Length: 358
Ligand code: GH3
Ligand code: MG
Ligand code: MG
Image (cartoon, rainbow, N blue to C red; front, side, top):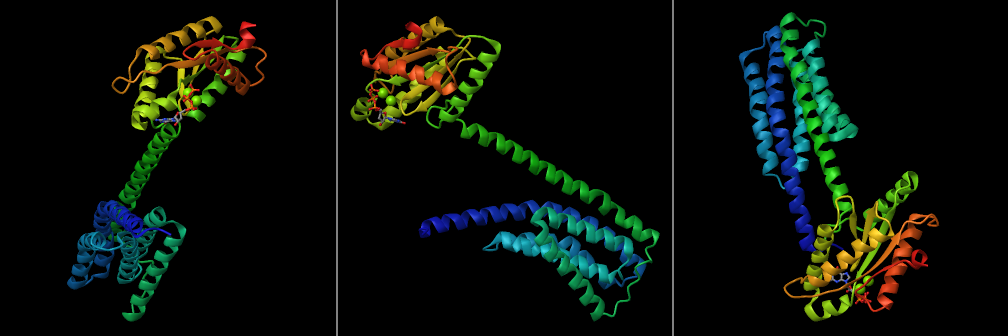
């Protein structure tokens, strides 16, 4: 069950989204209907339409976009109102096709252009609904006013007047689709970055760090260069939370992440393994180099103060990649074993995996 506060928030969000949707439709409708006025004007010219028909057409094509926008913006459900407006666009199109006596060139182009934007905005079902409304409106008008179809009488005026709509409107719809696709690509990139970053420390998260270890495992094997991983766990961190509070604990975690970023070379990769545990991937480092880096990190953490004056130490396990490591998990597990040896030996120290020191 949703609480009424949640429902209200959701409704407010969908009203906002609906308004944005209606806002996006406004300029294309203004421009599309202005081009439509020229297109329909060609048909009316060839029919010798009366001034009041011209006046109605201009009212529809130049006035309706503003009324449609106003209706959507003040609606309780702007999205649904805007879909109704779009259906009305097609309905009006149907009416003008009948008024032009189904004059082939402008009629076909009106049908095509009105169908293209409906398909782009609402998909096949919405397109079918709008086409139905259009055919129904054209048929009703023809029957009501006994309009004789004169399909094959498109003269040069009607054909020329339809050209601007035919040329410009697809370009407008195409550019809108391009902008949308570009925004989706950008958002996908941002989502991918977010989903691989730890929110607290801004380091790569567990999954992203392990993926980097897997890639490095394959690369080091293929190219034969040395490589190492460190597993780092803060000592008695529970006591820090208990003494200084969890916000201070969070601050310490952020600070340690900063120490890691500063202490490492560009191609080294620290990550938050989970809780108060960090992993560090050291491409190109052999066992001795990894131990030296681990010792440097350990000292920097020991000497730093976090969240004011909170002091913390870290235990670190090092494992250089060995030919015996069957898979990346086995490599990380050796660093983990070394870490627990460092803990058992009294904490605040860096130790190699036993396999290596044996
Ligand atoms: P040891 O020296 O054996 O590692 O002791 P420890 O207290 O560090 O180890 P333990 O695993 O008992 O406690 C880890 C603590 O880390 C407990 C947990 O509340 C804390 N912790 C884990 N994630 C976070 C976090 O995101 N923020 C804060 N403030 N604390 C966290
Ligand atoms: Mg700990
Ligand atoms: Mg731990």
